[in-house]
Every structure is written in C-alpha cells, then in structure tokens.
Length: 73
Image 1 (tube, helix red, strand yellow):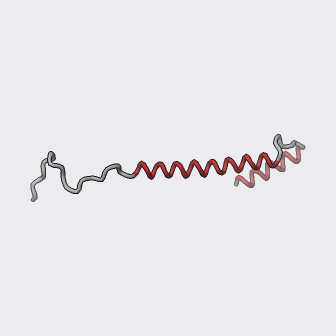
Image 2 (cartoon, one colour):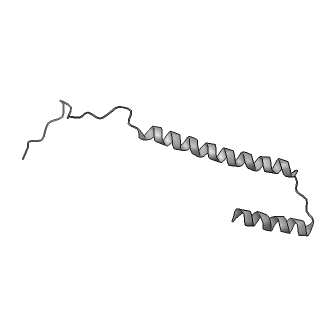
Image 3 (cartoon, rainbow, N blue to C red):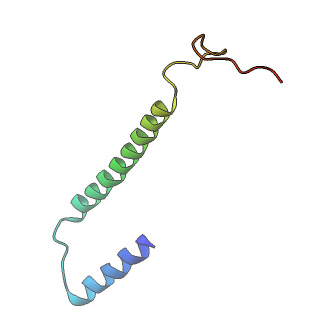
C-alpha cells in the first residue's frame, strides 16, 4: 500500500510539475535510516521485554517456614 501511495504521489507531483525538495539520493538515505532505526528500536524493545519477563530470583520449591501449612485432607 505504501509503495502504491508513493507511486501515486510521484505521478501527481510529476503532472503538476513539482520537484522534490531534496535530491533523490538524500531522500533514499533518509528512508534507509528510518528503516534501520525502526528495526533497532523493535529489537531493543524485544530484548528489554525478555529481560523483564525473567524472574530475578527463583521461587522456593517448598513453603517458607513462616507460612502456615494447610492440613492434608
């Protein structure tokens, strides 16, 4: 969809006679930077969420002594 919208806007600008405000290579370099930044932010967010999901200390296998045990039925 984005590609189609870009082609359509390029056609409209060409028909009206507007020129790009930046050289083509500069615009493509900017798009590359946006894409790389998005990937880096996504990877960093996934890494941080995995780090938060891990418990810092393992849970004890048996109840702690200060907790009363329930009688067996």
